[in-house]
Length: 323
Ligand code: ADP
Ligand code: MG
Image 1 (cartoon, protein in one colour):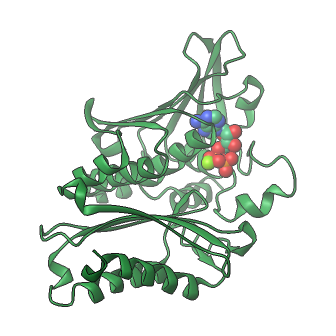
Image 2 (image 1 turned 45 degrees about the vertical axis):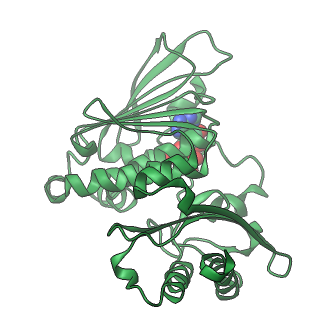
């Protein structure tokens, strides 16, 4: 059983990246306004996520790492909304199988906070502690029992994707102050959206545009921030949020790439870079849950039509005759 649990946990949390994504999403769910992340050795030695959110109730510690224990489903109606993004109480449970986890948390309405240590779903120890409002989660020795996974990790790639993750999340949650530290050195601190994009892409803010595309027919609202094709040979980045969750959708990604290709016929798009941030709000019932359990690939009703419509509108904005 222990082995099965370990393997199952390894599926849910494949990389330090996945741990951080889950933890940061929890902080966002807890209404944090500040989220600070510390990483040592690309997250293999220590990950610390500190937020000033709602905190965790003393009574909840016992069940915190139990599989399928979630505080987020109060009424049955919530299910369709929540389940569309998977996990449902699996993140902390899974992480506790492959690391040494410590949770320090204090709710605003409590005098003291509590510190709990966890392993393999179990609460090992718990004691009161003086601390500020909010939650700090420490994940030490990640994959200590999956030695091959530790060895196989490409640390510099991992740090890059984590930085990108935090930058993307900060674009969407622009009211939250994010900070990311590598080896106690500040790597990223969120400021404002356009500033973040222009820093990532090393381009002038005047090359960045922001638009709203909505449709009554397909019942969506979308907000897009995009750059022109920049001649600097740098990355192409498509960052997609559907109903406030960072997800992947190949149909949309392909259509967006095509839009750039069509607009820059004379240029080889492969040589240039662009950045697209797209946030779409759909009716929860139109979203298809978990196509892939850990990659958060999403499918939704009228996917082709909506993707085409958004990319066509983007194309109009990008084409030179518009300006
Ligand atoms: P889920 O997010 O699907 O509920 P998780 O395993 O990610 O499952 O988290 C389990 C529970 O732990 C959450 O439902 C929440 O009650 C609590 N929790 C985790 N992180 C935080 C946090 N940063 N602040 C407040 N509560 C948290
Ligand atoms: Mg969660």
